Length: 209
Image 1 (cartoon, rainbow, N blue to C red):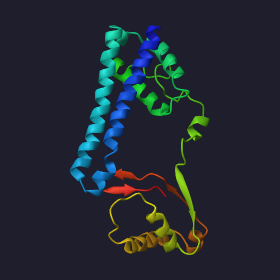
Image 2 (cartoon, rainbow, N blue to C red):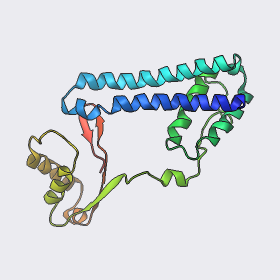
Image 3 (spheres, rainbow, N blue to C red):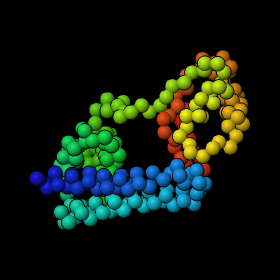
């Protein structure tokens, strides 16, 4: 194994470790939201940021152990980037792996020589990979009878574990908002694409429409 290969694999392994811990923290998002643990949500957000920064620092220290003068060898890092790119064709999280590489580079070189030779300014992967998803990202709904019935169907499919406080009231609020923006005819002919995953942001659980 060449030094370039070793450094490239060390960076990717560092990203894998960071991403695994990120998933551990994120897995508790729904529980914290349903328990109204707003303080816990804020702590988790801070921990995710700290975690990323910490893993970038750990990888940088590993690389300096491998090559003491690595932060002075931009040409060497360009070769590492080539090797790193070769690890990504079958790698599922290639976009954020490229971002992690950029973070490591910036930490090593103190944000100097920021150009496409040294960084992933554009992704190294072909365009078709961006269109691929391991599973469907959304479901499609159309109005069969009326808008409230459609919303009842959509909301009943949400993976929430607590009972709804007042679903009829919330359906009415959604209807009022939609009718304020669109005509009845537009809504009757609309196609609704609903994200399969809920996104939790502070006190909000969002399902993209």
